[in-house]
Amino acid sequence: QLQLQESGPGLVKPSETLSLTCSVSGASISSNSYCWGWIRQAPGEGLEYIGVIYSSGSAYYNPSLKSRVTISLDMSKNEFSLNLNSVTAADTAVYFCARRPLVGGFDSWGQGTLVTVSS
Amino acid sequence: VLTQSPGTLSLSPGERATLSCRASQSLGRNYLVWYQQKPGQAPRLLIYGASSRATGIPDKFSGSGSGTDFTLTISRLDPEDFAVYYCQQYDIAPVTFGGGTKVEIK
Image (cartoon, rainbow over all chains, first blue to last red; front, side, top):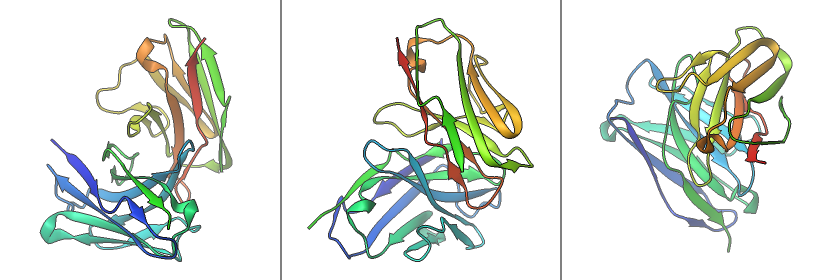
């Protein structure tokens, strides 16, 4: 059974880098049939797409975050990661990792992890 | 941009819910999905390709529409269906989500 689990610091200081990892079990991130993504949700707000990465290593980002975001794969650990630099309080959110078929919606999600940006 | 309406829908169990999602540009391939989200949980995929139900989704949920106007219909609301519903498009880069419709108990 596919499971995704986010991990990383729950508190990040302003101007620093937010780093999260999504550990995947029950499926291989090297599959050509899927891409792997990050979505966030600020407290009380809607969903915001951050970006996805394909097994080829090609990544695509939300233009509003593109200058600050990097998504990467670690095939050896079956994990993918999110780095968001120069964070501000506006980046405080629950961060979800998820799987998406090449054609379709995000069909499997992690439980989400709250990251607070505060000094 | 995806615009969902209404923002909140107040209905009673057993009633029919009709949720709207309007795109600012035509989605030529109808790459439109719907999610359900309950408090404290991750979203759950309901509908993809505008009208195809995801695995394990009961047939009380149906999606329709094309181009710029899409609809999610819940034929009879059960207590567990009261939640927030989001549409999302992956037809035109970048992927975008609608603002959500909250279906609440009247």
